[in-house]
Length: 228
Image 1: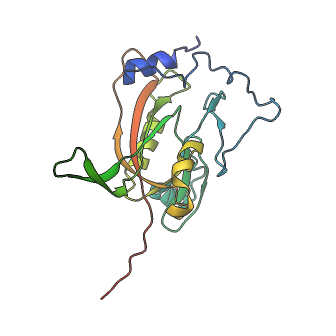
Image 2 (image 1 turned 60 degrees about the vertical axis):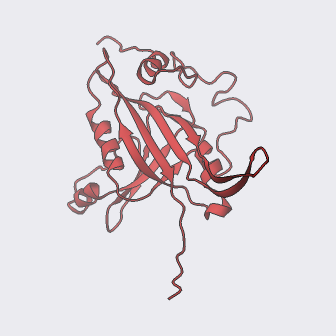
């Protein structure tokens, strides 16, 4: 069978409309850094790895892992039906579902936030008085590609991503970049996010590749105190 080759950097630009240096067409190692390089930093300050391997065994930089509860697998587990590892994840059993970790394939991560500021004009003076109200949630956008190792539509992994999106609860995210903004003492060390939007942009001419985009917002735990 002939080898299937394509340029991920070109696919990303065609799909999302801009270039990114996150993909190397030949999937070569990061310049100057290999698994054998002395002193290479493998993990971020909170323990999330800087490197992982894709389904084809190629190393890539800045993986993103989501942890979710898959209740459908819990039913299979109770029925004694064998292996329950979707994608590249690992899991542990639970009474309401199987806790599953899944590496988002070929992720490119961006983070943004904004402040709510009240601006009051001054009489007979230029400018405004600015009162900082609060810092809004962090918005995390992950764009990437789901790729089948065979020349077929990657139905299983698309289904897994749909299952993750349909979770009506907060999920855990592990990534060295998101850890900087989320896993902090003033946020109670929470790495929780809620998926706000999932989309699968169209792409022409490639059967075994499906682009995806996830929009997530940070979810910080609060303790509510009744004053009644």
